[in-house]
Image (cartoon, rainbow over all chains, first blue to last red; front, side, top):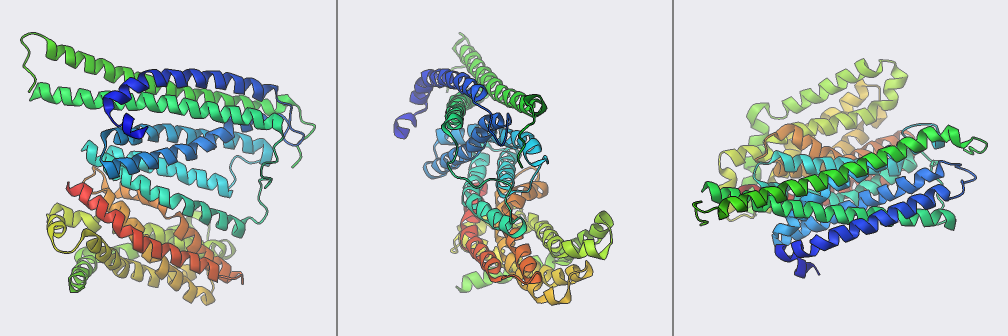
Length: 238
Length: 60
Length: 221
């Protein structure tokens, strides 16, 4: 599938209908998910704030998923030197940063009623914050180098360094957490969610994912056009 | 940690801002992506029209 | 091997000799340590509890300082081009640069770290542990920081950019480094933390040159 799409023209033809299709799917899933979230019964422990989970947890998933996409696109761009992979990496970062910011903000709004404080230096919270800083660093590096290809390659290397580093950060922060906060504020109950919460969570996660897919395609299209406009402008000037 | 006994209204000041922030960020992501794509698409079309204009410099 | 040695000697001479060598980083370290009591209050109980952590934080910040010139100097005067064309792979050049950076900056900072921590109120019994953790961690900081230095080559704003890129990457060594001292001070088993710190530094030593060389090639292309 990647090989077929590596041709920019074929990609443009594909994304022309794939992006709207994903957008429609995202809109459908989002309305279904929202309806499920607000018709879900209140949690006996968390009360109505359990509804925050349905918009917070998918954002946190997407924060990590987008970074994985960014890393994969950067790897493709560095190894195969492909324009489209470079465009995909560039297009991915702002979306990922948006989802990460969303995860942090909704997390704070969930933390206040649940833990009585806006911010907890919990392992998970801290890891997501570091992830957010990674996104910012990626975009800052890209913006600071004038030559575009070089900027994308440099930030691609940084994305890969981050990809190796993120598990280490996660591990170190988990370890640090056991050192400083023996009693975790999170309930460490794995998949103990009852189905009436699992459904809205799953649907919302899929909705976010479809939305990201649609927007990613749109932004890659924008990048392809931008490249085309730049080369046309150069030709006109030369 | 149990917060039972507190009514929905008490939580509303946390839930609705979170929903609003989510809606705002998602809406920003949608509009920014669409506007960006449209801007560059228009730009490409304008440049191509320029090039196709009779009397324009032929493409190298 | 002798080529690598020559490179290393050259790097060491440049890092140590030019522009005051490690003095600037050491002074910066001392300045941060001076501002800390002024910011959080001079009460010994409060200072003492944050002293080892604050020393590690200041260490991470101070090790950022000299990074900007690590590749930039050679990049600007064309030496990096020559090195890229030379017989030694750029990975070896990056390794030599990282090691020289560690010896010329990390080691003096590691010597100062216990002094700073004690001045802030850490117990004398912590001195060896602070030195060891700062020395081992400094290796990781040098090689991780070198990646940021190489990546920001040819960018419009070197220093701040390096800090923004590199500081999130410094999270693990800071956690493990301060963790060693924390565990040691509270009588817990400090060996896991020191093991993690050493593992991080060795991984940075092994992988850092690859990323640095790739970044240099990209900047030279």
